[in-house]
Image (cartoon, rainbow, N blue to C red; front, side):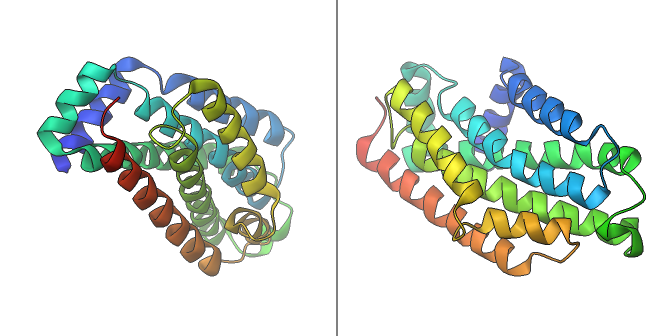
Length: 216
């Protein structure tokens, strides 16, 4: 699995297909927090935007190779393992985006707001946990809305957008509650556990589909 993860990480970096999701995340979060929003609010918004960003990263990873290259990777490491490694790299890239943006959010944030009495350390810790929830939910969405589950490009993109919206607005989703907890500087323990379970289920289901369908 380590070799497959390294392969997909190198594939992502060298293809430069990580740049559009990064620009989306940076521009949207930067524009929304440019007016000196409280740090807790900024982290809450960043957690929300990591859902579509990570779903996008999943699509980038699972569609980055032509069929011949996918067949070679699947033959070397197994179809399901190759697919899971791509999803792990997408999650890792989302974590890197969140960690990279954290110092900027703290530096540009207002000193007022719910986190002002908690201290920057707690705001940062809670904010990073909230962002992790966004990463996990985004990966879960991407896993069930893209190949091999939804193979045609147009339906896959539409399904991804629809599930992203639902993940951010449906009360049963862990993302909205985690965003509220982040803004209120409350540790999103339950939401993080729920997001982890959701991600594991989605990744497992998509890996089983990948094993059943093989390489197109």
